[in-house]
Image (cartoon, rainbow, N blue to C red; front, side, top):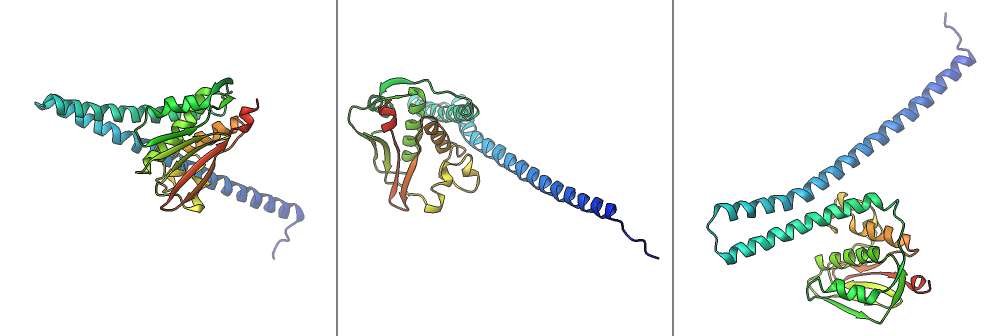
Length: 242
């Protein structure tokens, strides 16, 4: 003879089912987090492994081969280039850990002069079109924004890159462009891990730019056409009025 299930037992069963459902969701969430962490570690390992392998290769050749001075100088320049890349990766990772806690240190400065000095460190493809423009902002953080935007533009454009400064700061290239569906996604942290190769520095460059601009009450805007190039810009009128 079957025993009738009382209301208390039914309530207990329902509670257990609900707890089991929540537990499955938590397990799924943890699996996704672990997978994401694995992807991050994999990406970091990949980005660090390539320049380290190149550096080691050139050093071994210099030490074990009788090279002429011209070739040695060429190899040393390659080593320097790759150590600079490693330094940039480390700087980005370090800055990423500080962004949520950082407080801008506002000073008044000519952003066009900052851009001019910064551009001198790039190749001749970068051209500046500007008017004297004074803003109140964190100078170091704005330099990082300009550095990242110009570096990204140069990576994907064989033609000149234009930097314009007026009521907006614009970086314009004639590179390969970006799909419309990816324009917002490329500003997300580690987006490159999701099979996107637009930013070869862990997918942090534009995320850092966006976070810095948010600290200055402005935001990065992107216009792009596949095969024709991209325009990255942000409004600075609020910084000019401070």
